[in-house]
Image (cartoon, helix red, strand yellow):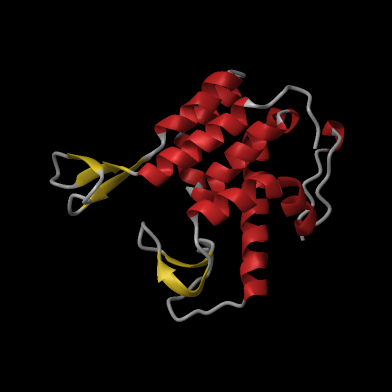
Length: 188
């Protein structure tokens, strides 16, 4: 299905299975820690119909999925995130842990947020350490109608609440540490 082949970089994903096998170190711990597998459609935090590990493409609220379908959605979505990140900054393929962290962010949050992020701006400018450190700042969900109990929240001018999410603090810190562990020139 996917063939992400930066030939001059020396690594290839010939299949989705290969993608998850190579990046499984990122997908498995993060997904199992922060996303639950749900075989029936539900609404995610932004209100979009989702299924399995947060898959949103063409999902209707009446949908159900098997374990095999969930695994395929996970592989497809993560491969799509890897492809997207490498298109934004082709040099990132020389920094495999940075690629893993950035792909994890796109997989979990969304492409639009990554395009506006300081991570991408720093990466494009070749400021890899600054880009990695920027992951730590993305630990807040915006615009709740009500203050979240047990969360550190600030009321905004429009009357909604902006709350720090402890789970996101942990996730972003993991991504930052993974990103910072890259050694230039490392290969998959």
